[in-house]
Image 1 (cartoon, rainbow, N blue to C red):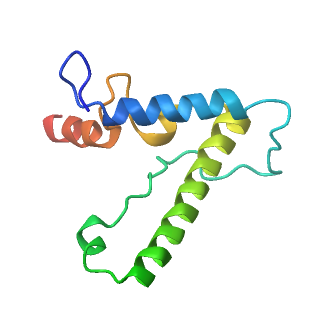
Image 2 (cartoon, helix red, strand yellow):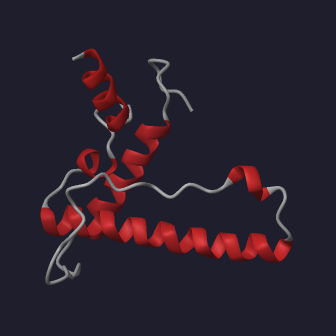
Length: 114
């Protein structure tokens, strides 16, 4: 997925999906926890273990999918809590800037160049 500028679109797609989820879910029905934690760090999106996927039995795949779904749900819940209750932006939460570039890599580059 590349956008019109030839930039990798993966980050932008994630941002747009998460922003849409936040726009939909952050309403008067959303219940914030008493204490909101974990919003000052970049929230890592869970990644599927592709390399091992092909070597798994059907039972292992079912188990891995259930585990992945649970991680995705926890990720979404954390993003929603931080956005709805702590006022964080999607970019702050997942570490992408407006260009859809990963924010952590830029920080490392800036340190190396500085």
